[in-house]
Length: 154
Image (cartoon, rainbow, N blue to C red; front, side, top):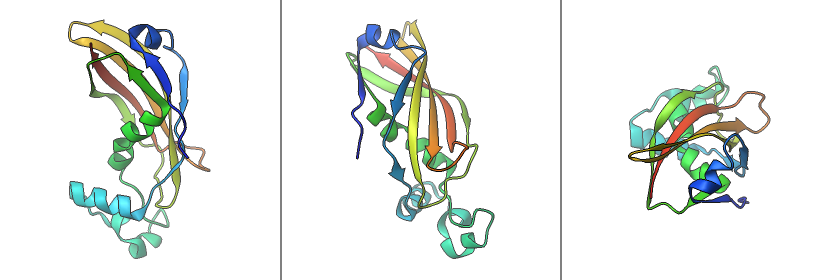
């Protein structure tokens, strides 16, 4: 089940929401198939990610998602949280800080929460900074905390 994204119309709509927690995505199960595909795409085939038998005896008791896989899911999960309209182009401009406080065991469910933290007008466009937290269902610690930077061009 997906949630309806909160829609922001142009700069004024976003500006009014700075400092707000926008919402959460729906829960998404992290499957071994997704982890294996990410391993193939990146060449990171560490046993903690792709060998369920060996990983069962390892520190996490199961295979775990790559931290960068969790990070790569932010746009997918974030699209369920918010939609921005009124710009000709939007790009991921970068990250100011990324942390992976907890591992994501395969089979667990994750979701993203987004807080809009700042909006800056620049000569290249409008820069929107957000705090994204990816939670693990049933865990006290998040899988990911990232300060994302998006550049929007009219």
